[in-house]
Length: 80
Ligand SMILES: [Zn+2]
Ligand SMILES: [Zn+2]
Image (cartoon, rainbow, N blue to C red; front, side, top):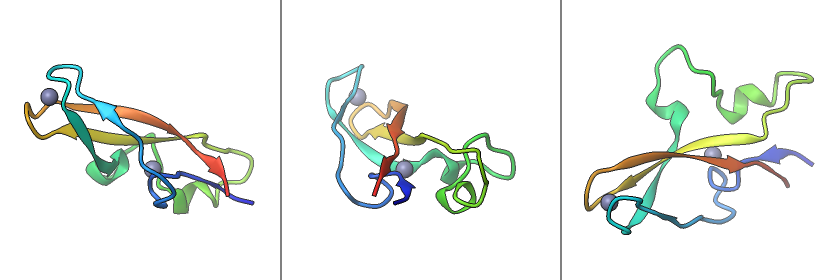
């Protein structure tokens, strides 16, 4: 079994409602995709190689297409 992010791996999607306009927000992917060099959030590939330091959250960026608001959502990793 492996600890993975269900969103990154396409297991399921979650619904996030925009706090500003109540529109559905779309998943823009893990936040690590938007940061260069330094990031406290490492991608799955790197995390799985770090012994004894499990990460239980994957931070995704959700964006509202109507009002352009964006929001970070912590996604619980699951055993798969
Ligand atoms: Zn993810
Ligand atoms: Zn909105």
